[in-house]
Image 1 (tube, helix red, strand yellow):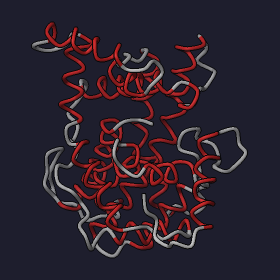
Image 2: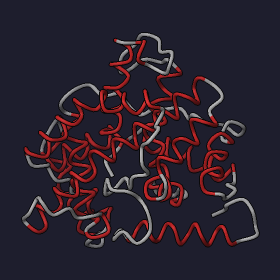
Image 3: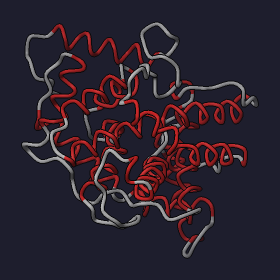
Length: 316
């Protein structure tokens, strides 16, 4: 999936448009750019990253598997229904921006993988087919975008606390029919925020060590390459340590879609997500079982198993 910087870039574009045209915004934003401290703005940024929290090491992965592969739009609607404060509304719409961002960009990443692995950009390869190359290209795209224009840093402070995490739990339970353990959700949220806040600095290290950009670049390259070689071939970590510069056509299409993103997202906002189908965030196609996407089938099997348990709230 597109990484944090890409989603923050899209979120920035939406927020900038809403500041210019406040009559179009479902949020009450104060003035401020990419470093503003407006709590509503920060809540939107949190939401724009939150669907990926389960993909961060050490978190509850099923959260993100469901959010990406099993009725993702229905879950977004549930968040909007459960939102009770301006910040929760902003978080829910930020979550929606992540959903649309994946729908419009991830199939493009799949085509870039198809070009690199099979020599044909018309072939879309999902992450399950070559996760190392997927991660390499996604990290490379983030590095490329970060070098093009100022982008909001990931929020440094957590959004949820021990009581407010119930908002996310209610939406998940309402959507999937499974109780969720609040402390587990909160730990996943805190860990994801804590690690993601370092993402821009991590990209800078990779840019110096792998792409030879910036001060200290010559000293970082050898240890990063040694670390990459020590990791199993085909793993996401090996992909992370070996970012690939996306081809010019990929960057061009990403920027074109990013430019159109505020208007595309506004149509979702104006319609309140009415009529938006549940789309698989990796393929961009309608989500569901038996559609040739193994990760979706596996997530549905996990969900069915949880529904069959009598223990109640979802644990590890």
